Length: 126
Image (cartoon, rainbow, N blue to C red; front, side, top):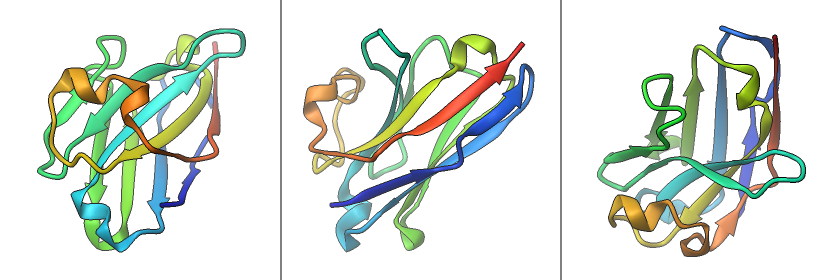
């Protein structure tokens, strides 16, 4: 599975961005999908995940501001980011796991994801 992330850019604090991640595989609908982010010099961290049945999971730091969704007809997962803060500045990565339905604990672990996109940079200015 190849993943292509896009939608990053520069936005002012309080603004919004929508990230997209297109998967190459037709079996996309059976995959669990996640978004992670990494700040230079820090470890990559979990942001959000969605199961094949549209169950969603969020990091506490983005809950209520970010929304993950998927369109299986387009093999695409989205991350709508609202009320952005400077601390949201990072490279955002999408990832896929063949385990379509699992616990939130599972989806928060990077090691469970087999496929990763190339990352898209989000910069939030204050």
